[in-house]
Image (cartoon, rainbow, N blue to C red; front, side):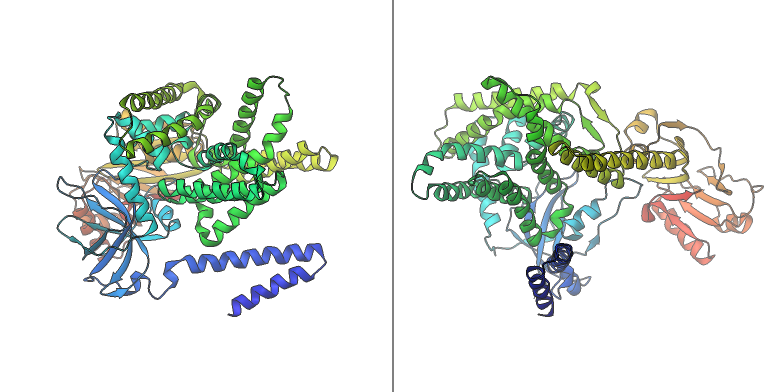
Length: 639
């Protein structure tokens, strides 16, 4: 109550005050506090009914499947809500891992399971610059995971049907109907992605091709698909505008159809975001005023963040809104640069300017997250997007006819051929290696300054003035300054890293641009190793040289002693070295500690876990710091 009163006072002050600066400051404060309150109420951990508050080692829990995820190599994965712990009503979502076997069943949305298992923490990345899956799940409101197999759970007969569950059932019927028409595996997976929002069955190779061609957004139902559908519906229902209150009727019909498509596509977060955004755009378009369209996009963003504040950290959310805002603000300026005279020329230039505007808007963020830039994105988009509307309409026709069981096989074969041609074209583009710019890395700060420069650049080209030119040039100088400063820091950076890799030992010494690596990986394994590649790209390392430290190296005025499977160590080494134990050496650790008095013992991923546990106990007894990379992550020694 006090919070509502406080926010109301700020809102009233904004309305009553005439000072523009003070009103703006109070408005910022109001939105800040609304955001904080929204995050608090959306965090399950802040409620007494949060499952962890009631969980014990022997607790019996009831789960409800909330979302089916892409399966892993050994487990099928689901988001599941814990609705009951020891017969106490609870809330909160976990990651459920069900072990794969020939007899295990698939679960559907809304299925309820009874099981007895323990909560597991989600492991953070063990090496620098690797994808932080734990942080990603936290942003989805998932804080723990459960592991089970067919003998540890019981599927209950109880089932509360939700809207998402109904959507999943309807989508399953569509998938079963389509499968009767013998589409090829890649054709069927792309159809499911394009029309039903299901990407679980797309092969890694096909996903990689679309990523490298700069066309992966085609496979994920997003603003692009909803925008095309909105344009088609707007064209089809335009005659309704002639009626009294025709514009209002047209908008209502379009909104109903958009949400019907969202229902078919599974009501996933990305689909709901896109439909919500274009729902406001549709309303703005009916007024035919550009500023109203921009305000509609911003309003939809604020509305989504009010109910789902963690969307702000979702990559899809960020890219979608940046692309739309880029099209609205940058495309008109690009379009003015050339004035085509013919219809086809005009449409091609319009599409070209839209693609470039969207790419400019998302480019810094894309490089920050994905560390690559597909140079042929224009080719992919200019060829596919003009036909995407027809592909979507054709897909809807295929779905309707297949559900009615009257789809001619000839039409199914023709539609499958179109999808195959699209996949083949994307594959060809993706294999033009010379146009794929990989291993590009920018920092978060540099990414932000890039956007500052883009905003000032757009502002200047919209309205050329001396003041705006100064702002633009200052932002360029700031961009250059930060780039040179960060580049200088990288060239002078020195650190020693004991990476974690199961069954292998990987130790690197970083000296500026050079990275000296001792490891038991062969050349092919070294090229494919994600931990090394992530570090190399993110840190801007230009050269990796494989060497041997010969069981000893010195770094930051500290001696590093490597003890491998031979168990041989040099007692003449300087006192109090850091000792790295590799490949499960059969040594008397107590004798080693008493002989050379190490300052720290490190065990990497190459040693047996039973050995590691014994070494940890020994170090604890002798009061020597012990560090295991499999538990604590890579050991980093900075200079």
